[in-house]
Image (cartoon, rainbow, N blue to C red; front, side, top):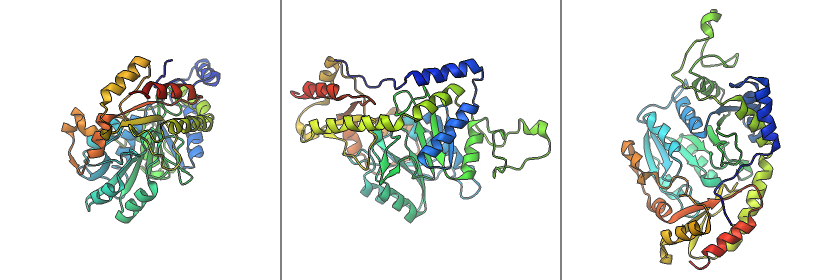
Length: 386
């Protein structure tokens, strides 16, 4: 039995959506993207949504937008707190905009921030905390929002792996001043490539739209607070106000997204049912540390960390998985401090013991929005005698 790391979530509706765009002949960002943005913001209860061509691009323009707001903008050299474990493009935009990264260790069971370490890391220089809900599992947002409020720092939420998760009944990806999502192939909904930024802040919304689209004024709200129009329509059509990018999605991405969003609730429900089966099988197995659910996880995948006290080497486990045809990956990107790229960062490390254990002892196997219980049984039987 083959146990894949990811699978397509498309049905006939998504294929029909692509064909409608092809028939219409308009492929660049337009009506379908705008409708998907409106639906996406409404689904998560936020005022504004900006779609980009990837979750990484969403992170890029989200970080950039905080440098161009009128009041209290971020500046190069400002301190931002980040967890040791996340995907690479959580960190890269922060570095690219000249921020100083302060790394905090994770909790080995939840894989999100060690809250005690986070509290100790906050200093008078801290301007922003990046909260990352790892592989579907919400951060401890009551603690994190409290820390941000007490210290008057911005909360940036990278929710690219956790669409559909909830903490205290509230969707993750809605707690921050600015929040990012991904709609990549293997994620909770897929538009081939794609990403989102959500915010309730009108100024940031208009900055984001300009940064996404060459830095020009086109597509701005009529009452945009980030520039004043002049009377020259010829010039206004190509007026550049910010050092932006071209990270626009296409109409196919928007059309597919509308179809996928209508299925998200059902997808997450099935993922949670699979997770209950996984947890039931591995509950009490002292060889592995599995992810402790905070709130309501949307269960992107199933993480397993070989317990350092078990005497088992991870390579033995991974060989057994490979021989059985069970695909597996490092947990998110592992500990970013163990990657070559960190030599370029301006950074400080407050601790990474647990992140190292996850990096060197951990892995994940896939979860899918279909009944996976037979494959989870196969995983259990494969590992039973390791």
